[in-house]
Length: 327
Image (cartoon, rainbow, N blue to C red; front, top):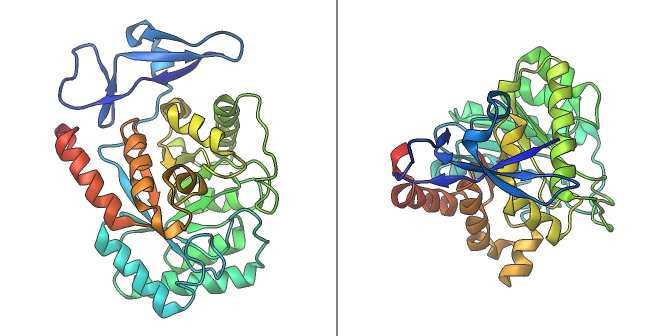
């Protein structure tokens, strides 16, 4: 199999023979293989079938604001674990520029334990209902692995399901999403949160993650979820070392070959603190923004972020100075 990574560029100097992909474009692709050295070839040498593999990220990147209603999330656990504080934070994220709110009631940080369904529902559904009641009208995503939690969230006003297990934890979740006709985000993770960071191993992390996500995307389509309702997340930090994370980020445009938009969830992750000398998660906004901008330059469609205001400002300046034609 030829793995095709478009060498994305952005800005007004688009050559006549460039292939447009959202706000970016490319004239060449890097061909990756498990057995042969990488090579770069002109995009004009691709077959129509190969060009048709690439998913369109849309007309502009979107910001997904993180709202954890948990007591133990790695960055903000306990900060928004009452209804009043959670609703206030959700409203603040929207005011700061969030296009989507991602609400989770179960921490999936390394070492986290499974949360019972009823507890997770009690942490999320009332917050979603209260946000809708307060007039919040942006898309709301429920960050869960469990069908019962997703069902309660959708009934409370959520409109997207984001599953860090890649829809492998609960066999009832994909059929629920298909029946409800809601968009989904499928993420790659190696192992369970309790043990995923204990010596994760890959033959080739970039291609292994691509293949795993390709299998999950096709499984979701087979379950009745249309491709146009699927977004894929390579799962930075979920069963991956710092080197694994960096290998994915360096070539994240490969995932356009899944035929769906790409979501990046790197905000405040440990590798940002390690490289950026920020041991406290709350001090990692600058590094998180840097990673987000590099990903947007490769056509990543959705940035999942804690520090929404900082990301919104940076993206606005990036658009104005680099890629103003899509503004």
